[in-house]
Image 1 (cartoon, helix red, strand yellow):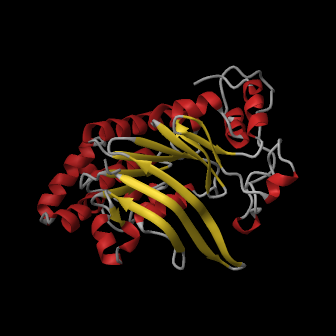
Image 2 (cartoon, helix red, strand yellow; image 1 turned 45 degrees about the vertical axis):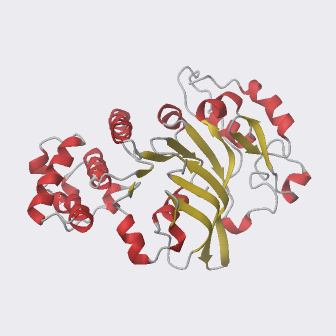
Length: 334
């Protein structure tokens, strides 16, 4: 059975003032139609660049290697015109910040209608009618009146709903949601995630959900990649990754999450240090400079993928020690 999306050994190099820097390093994964995948990690780990690579929207001068196949079609072999026909039609993306994703000079209805005109050949009147229906479908109150508004006249939650309507306009087969609940309050976050999950199930789309929030990932995707330094340091079914917590970075993320029941005045756990710059990554494990288990070899030797269970892989030279450490973290289950 052909996968909806298959990514093999994806590498993305960016131009910087100091020279080329590899931002995504040998990433591989597959996604079936109707399945859900989460990309997790701190800012600067390569999650959003991976999404932009899938969409064909990398920054100017970026170099890309590897393979991205969508229903068997090699996307890296497409020219700009062919990719434009695919983007927004069969593959769509909900961007992280809707205020910058939306055009401040055009009314909401016109922006939701645009992909319907470009990809489905609807007339402007037909597209505007469908845009109002879509806005109503994603829960935007008084959709007909809101369609006449400009982005700055809407709240953050309303703009995010508009972004979802735009992404769903042409009924895509693959939906990429990049931090879709950033800067929204908890109630609106829940509504947005419930809306996305419902639409994915209803339409049988594949979903890639990018988030730094482990609770969001735990509740909304069936499999996940934990990314650091442009690599997947741990990958597998969400339930298996949460149960085993095999990689020290995964353990650090889990231990650092805010949770109920913490005593007043007790400090949250943190991961020591910061994410290194793209040109500062060591030849070995990207996490070695921050890892509590690292030894000298971790800086030099790139860890191979190890299989922990069915579909559950991770990269760590000190796997036995890491697995022994996991139960001692006392991270409560989701």
